[in-house]
Length: 256
Image (cartoon, rainbow, N blue to C red; front, side):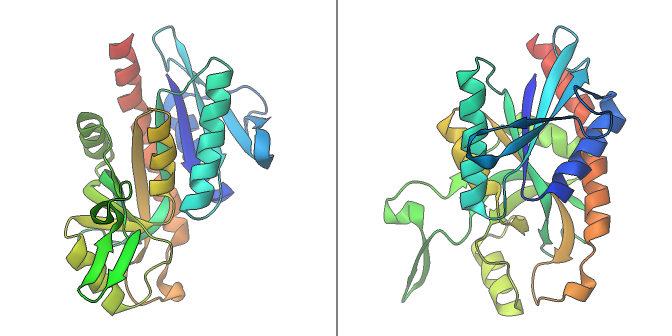
């Protein structure tokens, strides 16, 4: 199996890599701690890990990319990595959008993990006198991508995670009123972040399945940086990727 993990920033990328090392005895193709840095066009760089037992023939690969903040940066970085892999004759089997985010209370408390059953661009559309209209209803593309149902449900169970909609926003929610509006429009939403839809758009364009995994650093609502628990969320992200590996090993074995 060839897996691409896309995060916004290096701290998220490194947290995921630590989990991969711990669970699957990841053997980096370069330095024992950081893996092999592989440059991509556009100034991007992949962190590459060779994975023991992670495939039908005893090995697989994970590439981790910190593509930048926001769905545009995420889409550009993901598309670059996917295109480079295809041109090299080594296309990815799965893309995972991962990182920390805000959780809707009480369903997704700080420190918890969420796996998306739907990846939704929450603010892609138009404001009208009657309220917000998503881009889909305007007749321009889609605002929703669906991860593989069986795989995403299995991953959620293995991670002990909440399973529901993860919203992609361009502006982090900072008031109780805006949080309530989002929850009203998306009653199954568990978390919000800024990159998942961009990753999913790029993956869909290359016909590669996508998952989104978020660990909760803060509550969706009034902005209170003092209450954020970024360290706890990064630690939870490491644990999430440790628990993810056996699921994907099983998937690789069944495909082989």
